[in-house]
Image 1 (cartoon, rainbow, N blue to C red):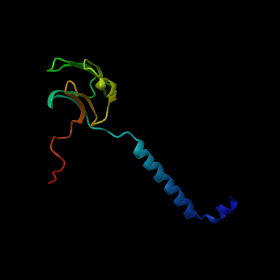
Image 2: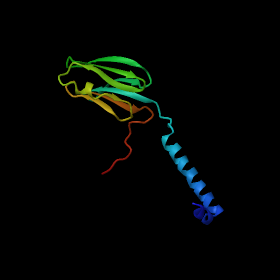
Image 3: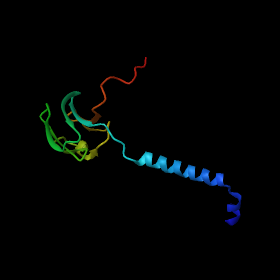
Image 4: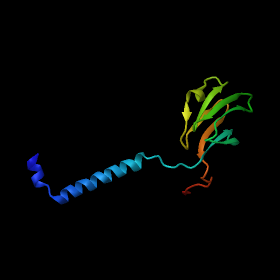
Length: 130
């Protein structure tokens, strides 16, 4: 070990410290919570928007579908959970909680989709490809 120290110069130590600080900086940048734009929970039946709520608002909602069925969902602590549905398979209830933009809960028998969207984004496409 002492043999290694005799071969390292002052500039080697400075380079090692510099790389160490860069590594710590990158780690903090990756894991530091970033400010996220306000998100919205959109509820659509047959593709038509029937309800829009802020993700930050804790609430419990029951949706009566046009086919006579109903779904109940809960918005709590920035997450959406389908708590009850009277459909046969209850896959939507088994989906669990969603909390990231773009995630969805789908109830196929009732043709109901709950999606978390970024409320600051517009509905225009990013690009059109021919």
